[in-house]
Amino acid sequence: MKFFSMKTFVLLPVAAACAFAGQQASAESDTFVDAIKNGKAGLSFRLRYEDVEVDTPSDDSADALTLRTRLNYTTDTFKGFGAMLEMDDITSLTSVNYNDGVNGKSGPAIADPEGTEVNQAYLSYAYKETGGRWGRQRIILDNARFIGNVGWRQNEQTYDALSISSKSLPDANLFAGYVTNVNRIFGEDSLVGDVDQSTLLLNASYEGLSWGKFTGYGYLLDADPSGKQSAAGANFNRWDTNTYGLRFAGSTDASDSVKVSYAAEYATQSDTDDNPLSYDADYYNLEAGITFVGVTVKLGTEMLGADGSDGFFITPMATLHKFQGWTDQFLGGGLGNIPGGIEDVYLSVGGKVAGIKLLAVYHDFTSDDKGASGNPSDDLGSEIGFLVGKDFGNYGLQLKYSDYDADDHGVDTEKLWLTASARF
Image (cartoon, rainbow, N blue to C red; front, side):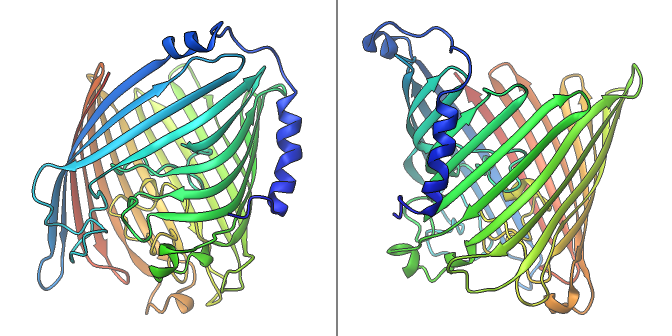
């Protein structure tokens, strides 16, 4: 672990500047014992059935019924200090006859391996409008397009990190994090379940304008694969990238019954450190939406570009399932892109009827550079997805379905999920 690196040198003054700014925090416990007694415990369950059908000559299929049990405890604060511990257990309620990414079975993957792990365990400190965490923690920045927790899978992605966040400046949010390890969804038994890091994350946003929020970020990823990570044969040095971007998102009332939303984002990425490739690639996202009579319609386009055959824009620490379709056709081995890049034009229609959430999403995928992708055309396929969900207080039910129609990438794939959740 290269903790005292140049990136640490950059982070320390940022953390120091944040730590002494702001206004006094809220009341806390008078003694350490009171902080323990006044803490909060949580227990939740998530039961999920997943079915995958792949249109191959052998008509490959897989299904899994898994239960995630999560138990956590967060202390109250004492002199600004606190702590949090969270444990997850993932259990298959049927025989594990599917490829879970660990058991060596073939066929379609359902990346929910069995296991019990520490999901979060950190010490925290808060002073005025600034707080810090040290240890294993959840980090979600903006819409999770670059840094996320992959919360859809049963085993969540969390980070071993030192992070500082501050709201000490008017209408501004500042975040700085130094990550030493990424705990991926595949679990500790997997050769690729963890990736050692020397990664710096910087994110600053301003929302003092009535018509939207501006965000600027810099994500300097540096993977340090060692031990079983190297033995896996995965080229984690491909993660070594510098990404800088700007994002703007907001909404406004066009009338008493109509609301308009909008978002625009641009980022640029280049190789760094031990990356075996040498490239510069771009990312952009444009989205517009309108809400009327309880129905929201959104139209957008997102592009993860390619620098010819030299390389392509990657997002290895994102919540990838949230983007480019729910059947996860473009994971690219966890990089979030494929040679030649991807342009995704999408349309979604959603709303609620009698408290039931309804959502339909359509994606059309094309290649940014078909010459680099090796495909005869730039048509990569299309996908349609449907979601129906309902919350009943602390309980929830959800049905989700997605159908990918392949063209010059992958094969036709259908996925179905039934999820029931409870939290206490």
